[in-house]
Length: 264
Length: 258
Image (tube, rainbow over all chains, first blue to last red; front, side, top):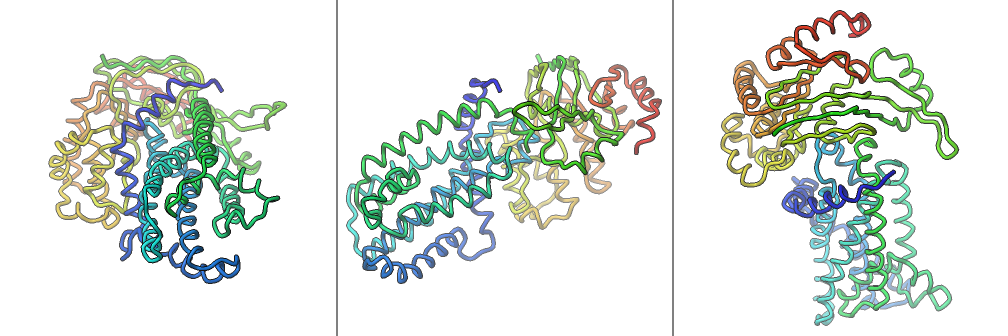
């Protein structure tokens, strides 16, 4: 299909300009999900917290590390993982969930993409409480490098935005994609060093970590939370990924944006 | 200048995920657009395509109130959605100059878990209103729907009629150049219906172009000054209401389909 870059660019710019809509919708969606519950969005936080609190006593001895160094690693890693993968899995339903709007109105669909990203940023800032508690409890030093979390978050959010466009479109057309993506994410969870340290893998198996894009996405957030700077390689992968990803997603969006209502 | 220019607009819907069984049913259907089977190519499987609009051309200018007539699946709703910018034509072109407001089955963005007030804001934004505009019109919407303190409660606690009132009040608060209406919008109990009628007329008065799809001859006659008869996605006739309605009732095939 012939790409229409003007319309895609206009959609993107209008989408960004409509920030009052998607910030509002993001909040509404978070509130809506936990309405009438006592803990609200902190339910997500509690369930991750309970998981970490339980598993740390199994995995720390299993991976032969002491709880004191394993707990912050697991907490920061899992909170980062939840954020990054939610962007992918919820990205798959970006357009299918917006069916009522898309089939009734002409509006920048990227509003829906930014809404998904914003919503997950909000959830992330609830979940980060776990890491804060762990950091304070274990007296992990907080210094300037901790501030690298902010650029890390921005990098992941920018990557998340193209992922929601790409996966949203592909999933709207091919309904097998969301369950497939779900499966792959589960697999990646064990392949990516979140439960285990990358050095434990041994030298021969290092490429599994080095070429794992998800690892780098996690690392730009996890390392600052643990008070260290992420490796430059992780920045190279994630910034490069954002550039390439946006090129691909934008090109596909320019080609198929007008087909999205037909697919729903 | 508010205008709508449609030039040989053609819309094809590819149908995904239909098995042969459901296909057999659709083949013998008497209503609906023309169903076509695209032959299998070297790189693609055979697929089913419904031609919802076929070479539709017309022009509307300020003051036009067009009624769309036709049996189920004739292409009325598809045409409205093309005018709303939802579907981009596969071939042909559509030019719409002016602010378009589509009012279809439901108000876009209405969420049952949100309160009435929250929905007024969200729906208003989706109908193209800015925050200032919504705030300016809030009192008018609140007054008109007469829901009082219910507006603080989630919409799912409303009765069906109350949801309709809210939706109607929001939807009719807009100031469009071009208004697209599907089947008109229903409006609660008798007293409210009378007030709704007045509000609807006022909305249409401040609209430059109206396109209304309906099965009700009375509604079309009272609101429109032109009519278009659609059949299987193409225009049979476009012209004065009386003539088009007469022609519609004379066509035997459609008359037999309820």
